[in-house]
Image (cartoon, rainbow, N blue to C red):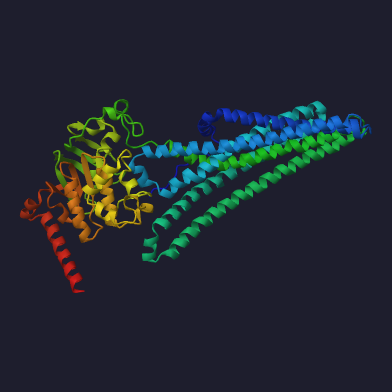
Length: 609
């Protein structure tokens, strides 16, 4: 699988963050409320040292306690108001974080629904899970709490600088001489931190993918006895992530103490110069205490902003991946005219959809997967409505490619595919795919009941329609034998049912919407002989009066096909019905004879043993 990620900018990407902030537009009232609360918090934090200065100069230094109780009451009220502000900021920030995460995940998931099959063939499941979980959480967290820290931090800094300059202009300038050095240090460390966090996010995606493969492939791992190798590979990934995480932590741990040292130097300068000013009578003792308090307070938001800035580096790595996912363009796109008339995948205009009869024609079709060799070259095939077409050939001959093109999971590089005489790109993808029933070799069932799975693609189906679909595919008998009948849970992926039972459920699910075109992809290759007979009857029932394509491994299942297409290297080498091809004694005859004798020998061995 292709899990390579594109390279991103080394520094903060303003354009990227502007795009991210577009997702906050629906929550602008919440953001405004949060910002207003943070301004109140910063304002109260800024005036508290002035109150301390007033108390020192008017009560402590003078020893006069007149008015102290009134002052204490005012101070208490201010503290209570600040407590309410803190509650409000936690509530607003938490709500913004949760709703932003939900919004971004919904957008990303919607984008995934619109992407073509080739995207899923290239991206591992773990890669996608990491995007929608940890990356989204990281991003929504920095947006919500970052607003808190940025608004509070800058408001505090500007308020403190203003007050410090008003209290003593010269002393303020001396204290702030450390800021240029702080700026240089910040630029240096942010580059280092961003680089390491990008590596962490990439490796995290691989670890999530490794988790997924380890769980889904547990049976294969045990049969191949490769648990030790799996552990080694996983340990190597976690080791790389640990090393990058440690480097990022080291840079962060050096960055924040550097800010702390500089803030201490600024405080020391204030003490030195301010102490001299008090001795000389240039300022009051209360003013010096307030000034020292402001010096300490000034570097507190600086440290917080430095911390947030470091986290922003990590969040940008997550943001880059989420936005790249959301902005990924599907390889299969309907034209504007088609969308205007027939709608999109998510918003179809079904009232404009024409009925499909089932005439299909491949005209001079060329196709290749990405940069690989050509799979089909100048391929031609004409199918009349209601015909049953079987596709036979060795692995890589083009069987699956033909049905994937028909379903428009991919599109021809050259040539055309016509449905009822019209090039199928002149209709919408959803129109075509809603008229196709597809049964896979290894059918996937969704967690839930049998009833839920049968009507999965047709939510409006009634219980009567569900029962009729099950009857048509001969699934009712085994369903009724289950403890809860149609309400029996199938388990994750349908693991509580046998392969044959899952196959029958997938037949019922495909047939309930009454598709005009039906595709069976090796539908009988993984089941026993008894279930094959049941499914063979099911196929005859389901495919009656429908245009159908059967990719066949067991040739006994296609003896009744109207036309059998024998493929080799993407070309048709033989075509005809079963008896015509047997009489020709060509490639199909050889395939049938080999399979017949192999199967007969297998049966003999089974009976003998």
